[in-house]
Length: 391
Image (cartoon, rainbow, N blue to C red):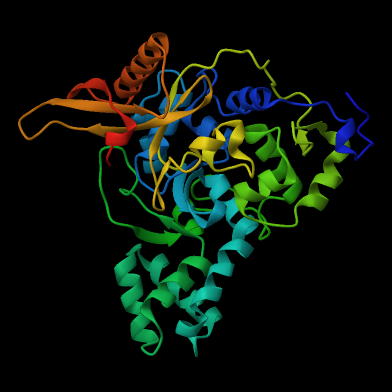
């Protein structure tokens, strides 16, 4: 390996796209399912994308041995994990500790959203709005509709949407249960992270400093879950900027590489980097899995010609991997009323060999077995043409 004192990427060892793919899959627990708890996995992965309720469960089913949805659901019920806006200003499922630590880290990004709502907040004192919102949701968790109504009553001349966006951006609001529990439903109801997790010690969670996780620690955790990666890769993951100086400060503690295009990559020296020929079994992923959203150059997982095929407008499809790379999309349909048999429809972007189709079907059945209870319907795995696939 080249001396760590050099900053010339051309002097670093080259990692091919396949080598990057295998390294990233290993960090993401997608080469081999891990024998770790759901809480440890949520911690290692620095959270799970959770725009919808079910994706965190699908993410862990792809990554953990003998995963039981009840384990993650139980962690949510006991307030050891929760749902809140963090990375990329989107909803994630994090441990209580990470909810409290990561939100201050990404707060500058989240507050930037308010720029688009300034016209609707003329005459509104944002400090007063934050204090009043905090008082409301800590008295009792409030559905978003009720919080908005209370804010409109206090500031009737302001835009209702702008008021609710301001409350969400200014305060670390958690979506309380039953929202997010497995097999349950519930509207978005909010309180503060400090109130929900008992950050004063009531739930055994220590409150972090007001600055949250230190940038150096954030870089190291990102690399552990998503490396090897460039500065721009991490900035894509969290959507913060100006992280270059943090990487430079850590340079002597990191291994350095370059990709096939000469982009400098950083990594933890002892992190796993399996060989490019390491087998990668098929895996089913939910919409918005962080594997597909956390690098500036996504070709390590998403072939360039498929980059637009995983989106239906601004909505993401559920996807699956073959040989470690994005290979297609899938959907799950329950049977009609009175029919206890459903269908898992799999659509590949390109041709699959017979062996690959069998492996994909086997993995699909495993996923369904992990996520289904004894009373859930049985499913048939069906392959369909991409041109005919509809959502």
